Length: 74
Image (cartoon, rainbow, N blue to C red):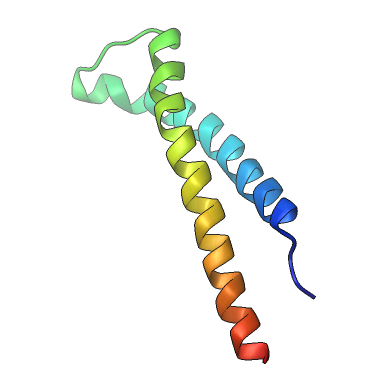
């Protein structure tokens, strides 16, 4: 069964949201180890800078592998 483009986007978005939460938690723990002191607002902003990239990356990779799967099914 083929995955729709909408479901690809839902999957990618879910992956990014979970990744965002984990990234913020990781930043809060790891940044101080490197002497980087920031507040929660900065952590959230830094995380958001990567959200768009992660969303596009996940979507494009999903579509790429779906295209490979569809070609091999022909």
